[in-house]
Image (cartoon, rainbow, N blue to C red):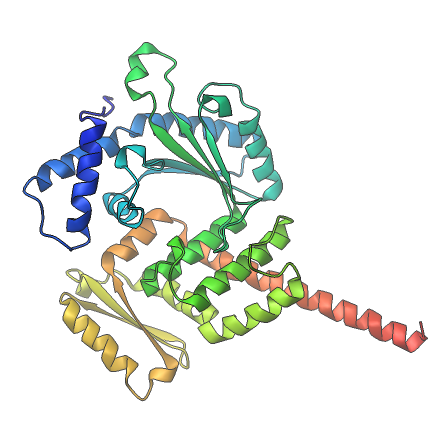
Length: 371
């Protein structure tokens, strides 16, 4: 097959990356050369396909050396994700974006993750050796404040045959994470999509941000790694605060309801819908979905529910259909991953409760024995 090559200068790539941001954010009309901008960005994105395949192949081989149960995935960054990232990070140049091509290994546990990371650190081939330009972001030893934990490696492609030298320097991101870390990321993506809050990027409601920071620390303790900055290292304190937020945010009910919502969408009746109104009833534990083509009518429907007498036990969420589709694309094992998050969280809380009971029993026995 003929792999796509970069056809435009990096200066032109950066120029159109900057030029299209105001149009994407709807702060200015479309530029006259919008079509050329699309072609330039699409070509630059597509030119990462061949280097991505090479990096993915090396990732798969290394992961298989550790365990046959590793899950390997790859993707080229979607146009919408490219534009959103350029909008958030104003000083970024499109030609220097590190994750236009990305591959991921999901390892069964922290032991296998460390073993895979060790293979990369000890590698001697040019394009994975740190001396060859690979960058490492270890969010397991140094978790982000939002609770995210994973290991990111960014390498530059270096051809081993003259015919492939055209792709030299293309950056590819490699993510290494455990199943527990992946379940966490899926849950964050879910809440981000369904609440339209930028939790994934450090924004959104304070209570949700705190919830995920606490869960990140509890999962870190589960895996024997450092806890999230700004949270307690004491499991009892973490659990106490987390239980309060679980109740306040109705986390379990919301995640279960939103997961069920995905099985309802898209309906034939919503074939032309651009927006979907999801109404979760906490009392009846049901969810209803209504499609809209007019965003003004959708917003009015949300307001009507929010100001109704039943608002205290209803959760009305307006979701873009594209957000649902993106969620499914990014997380093909969505149902299993979301369930894994809840199961892992419940298991950690049960373990803590059992430990509390054991400790209380020992204290009681000591008091009874007079020790």
